[in-house]
Length: 422
Picture (cartoon, rainbow, N blue to C red):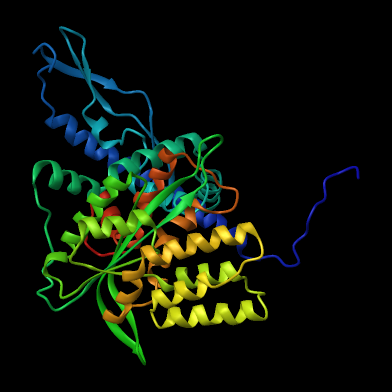
């Protein structure tokens, strides 16, 4: 093969050229109008600026314009020059209009698009998409730095309020459920692959619902959900979950229900920090463990014993489940170890299994969906690995989107002061 393979489209858009030229003209026009608006505001700031030097108190006089400054907006790059003032005594130079230009030179409107793309795909792909969709070319490193900085601005409100509550005694604003609604809290986590030689780590997730509505038969759908995810220690997560629960109306709820997969740290957290709550074990995880022990291809007596154990799960009988599993005679040492671990797991969560008789919620799909949206979709894609720092840059945006606060944040960030959720 002496040349690169070329590809010919089967059809051509006869007005495609007009579309591209028109779009380019619109962007060019918008860049011109944006430059004019920046220049207008700069002139006003220059006229209103103090003529007294902030360094020495000397007189300040006009001193031409600054070097060209880049401002990246949704329409592309705008290069502008701003009025300068110079002190006749100490030669200090002031540029009043510099406050118009963000430190990173990227507008809030473009920043929203960049963070939206970066929270859905790798930085290199997000940068390519930005180039294709908006004709804007920014280095991947600059892209990464902007997202990192913006994530710090979004911050972790729950972590801040937990610190204020447990260190300074400042209670957060709370929702009053007036004893009419239950509070259902799901706790789970997702293991993230570490980057290079760093070990994997767990991102912990909490999902809270304060309402439910009937769907069909005995099935109910949880409503009014909010979520939270963080990479932190168990101790810090306990404080944050309790803060989030209090904010969501834990103290005034008609019922307080925790749903978990039975992990030891979660069960201990609920027992120690929420002794008045009803803890229920996610039955999907229990059944999955039972099926994993016997195997989906089990036959004969093994299959009969497996089905009986699964039926006992549906009846919420931990003692019967343990009895059935303990009576099994595994054929290898590995299965025997797994059998002992499952018996211990069921014993540790016996109350959480029996508690299903007291509540109306038995499924965990809503919890898994929260983990998927806030953790898995961005952080657990094939081939991905992360540092804890890099992971922390993604979580604020995922939580914003899950809680339907994306539009609220970015509208305020762009100075629109609107409260319409995305």
